[in-house]
Image: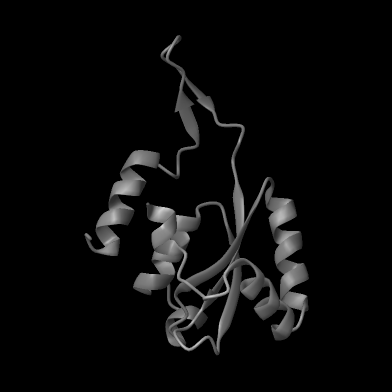
Length: 130
């Protein structure tokens, strides 16, 4: 298996994730994609003692940033880089509201969400790449 950075570089080149246009074959022109998704995600450290909740429009890119510690902060400091839970939402407003709802809950509620969807606390990042 190639290193994570190889997977991500390939993904970014294919999806051009910062340009949300798609080429229309009949006209040869670009149009903006209407089915943009937003993601609420929870990361954990290796021992599952630290959790981090976030929102993004590009889940693979954002998790890669956590894994490579390219953005300094909480997750880099505490080695929180395993994607253990995520939800797909249709608007940024909906994603932010859900993030606030989860962050306002107890750790126990976050753990219950993770266990229901991912009982083995598997790192879902590699599954998303395949």
